[in-house]
Image 1 (cartoon, rainbow, N blue to C red):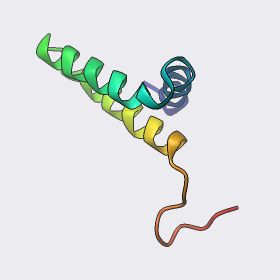
Image 2 (cartoon, one colour):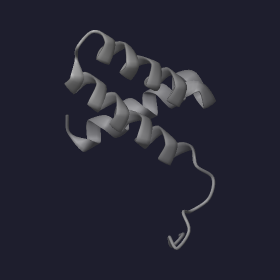
Image 3 (cartoon, helix red, strand yellow):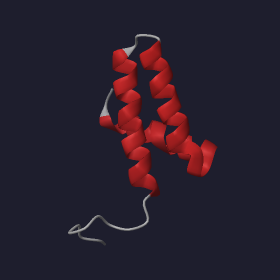
Image 4 (cartoon, one colour):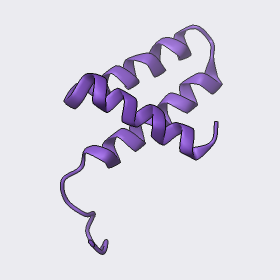
Length: 66
């Protein structure tokens, strides 16, 4: 899955679920893994990371802010 699609999915989940978006995406990743869909689980783990980036309030240590 292309990086832009990961960010789009993350954005949709944040709009739909707000602060619970990462939890929802993590649950989906777990369900896919339980079904044997390892690639799907990897995709949703990337979505979780993107969600966390979208929702963080401060730059990481050493990161420049605009």
